[in-house]
Structure formats: structure tokens, C-alpha cells
Image (cartoon, rainbow, N blue to C red; front, side, top):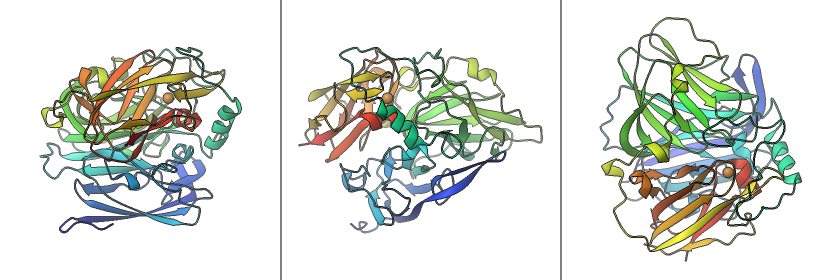
Length: 451
Ligand SMILES: [Cu+2]
């Protein structure tokens, strides 16, 4: 595969390796990461560029890379058993693709629960035509962390798999948290996560040793928020500031100002803030769990707030993408009646641990089929007691009930139905799954297949 004539080529070299990372405050963790750092170094290109990423696998396991949010050609999508063979330990693999859609994205493996180690990094696709009405940019990657300091992710998964759960029937509601796992859920989202992590991180740091972003009072800062967590929805607020949401999963929205917002695993939001004068906490509170991640915005000398700081902005009703945002005109999918509807029912329960789609676990599932050039409607109903951030590869939905809001990862609350349309313009077999990695790994995944 070669770049087209005149197409700019962006080369990236990524080594997935075992390493020891310093999370701050004396917390070090033996983990797996790209280039030995968490998060990995950003990969950045313009929309329309040709990206050539050489991946070297120095892990003691197979791996792949999925370019989350990018509507790339199918063979580069990074899903083993669907779009490629896994990259064996010691091997290299070159991903080559054009990145057609701008936005704040990220990349991570699509093998096992590797995303719950340190294997993730931002992928920023700039729109050369965008005016960019801001002065500074801050990339903020959220994560839930246990690897090397608590139970390792493979052992957590093995514990769930050992329950050997079967999917309960229609409307099975055996939800709730396992004793000792997850929080007492008082979340308006319902049961938000299963695993209580030892730490929650922003840009690879524990809250007692936060990273700082320096700016000046009055400057407009574009914050690119990415939730790379495996099992944690965050409620995000910047103390002393309102945030104006400008993009969701890479696409422009009608700007909406809020004091706090929810961001689920796999979601991305871009917000603009006008910096105040001082030192301000950016807090990501782990929804339904105890703990938070912290970073600092510094525009003046001053004392840093404590790791436990609780900005009052967190107490406001948090913005929720599908409920509170609509697409900007420039992001509207052209109107078209659906050619067909795919019915998706999310099934499963915590005890015994089992998750699936339409009564089947991945492996026993039947791919959902579409034809090229169809307008496809997906009607997704969550019949479980947990929220699920459902993610589609290679496409971006438009949500008709949300003013056409574009999403590739959409949070579906218990007993909620979300209708999501997409244009079948990217042939191949595409993964469709919950972005809670433990749910996906025990079966909450299927494929959308072009026939
Ligand atoms: Cu899920």
C-alpha cells in the first residue's frame, strides 16, 4: 500500500514493551507501554494524510493496534481474527492508512485486556481547514490503573471468566456490584463500573503528583479529553471554570457550556476554557467508585490544591453527550431514510459475570450484515443494570434523537434505547462492542459485516 501522489506521509514507530513507569509520589509500576511511557507519545497528522505506523512487539504476548475513532480502511483496523492476524511476540507489523476524519482519537491494542495496562496514546487528526479559535492546547488522557500495583488485568479477567456465567434471558436484571468490587452506585448513570482501581490517572500521574499545564490568564485553552480507562466513567470538571464543549468523538457540536461532563471509556470530548488567574484543579472523578484523577492548570504562582480537592463544579448536573449535545451543521450526516434497522439488545449481568449482545457471546454470535451504500439504523437497547459505552469501528453514527450528534462511542444507560444511524461507506468486517474491556472480553462484542 502506498500513499497517493501528493499525499503527505506521516511515519510513526511504536514499540510495545515491558517497562517500569513512574506514576509519581513513589508509585512505580511494572507494566506494558508504548515506548516505555504512559501515555504513549502522541501520533499527529492532518486529515487526509497517509499514516504509516511500524509496530514492534516486544511484549511476551500477541498484540495489535486499533486506531480508535478513525474511519480507516478495514485491513488497518487492528482487530485480530477480524481484520488481521495478531502480531506475535518479537514480530513487527506496519499499519498503513489514510486518516480521513479529523478529531481527538487514540490508539490501543485490541487483544485481551491489554488496554488496561499502559498501552494507549493520543492520536490527533487535525483539520487543516479549521480556524482553531484558541491559544493553547492541552491533551488530557484519563485512565484507571491497577497493573503492577494491584491485581493485574489478566487476573481480573480470569476471575470473571472463572464464574463461567451464562446470559440470563430477556431483561435479565441480575446486576449490581460484586462484594468488594465497584462502588455503591449512587450514580445517575446506574451501575457505572465493576473494578475498584488503586489509582486513577491523568496523563500517567497519580493525584498526589499531578502534571501541570502552564498558560496565562485570559488565554483560551482547547482541552482534548480522552478516556483510555478500561472500566471507569469519569465526571470531569475544572475548578473555577466553565467548559464549552466543541467536539464529541472528533466531530463539531453546537457549542454548549457546562461546569462538568461525563466521559465514558472510549469517548473523547474537546472543550474550550478561558483561563483564570491562579492554580486550578482539573479533576476526573471515578463515577460510582471512590477515587479521582487530578491535573493542574497553572497561570500564576500559587499553592497546588490537595489530591482530594473537590471543585464545586463537580456537584453540578454533568453534561451527558447523547442527552445534552447536538451536531454542528458542518457535522450533519446528509438526511436519508434508513434502508434497514439492526436490532441490538445488550444482555448480561454481574453475577455470574456474563455479557453479550442479542443473547449471544462473541464467538457464538452471528455477524450483523449490511450492504454498501445503505443508510443503516441501529436500535440499541440496554436490558442490563449497567451502563455500556458501545463502540463501532470504521464509522461514525449520527443520533437522530440528539440533533444528529456524531458519535463512535455512545453511552447507553440501563433500560435505555439509543437509535444510531450510519452510512455504509467503508466496506469490511467491523467490530462493534462495549468499551468496558472486561465486558467486551467475556462476550459483549459482535461484527458488522458488509455483504
Ligand atoms: Cu459493557
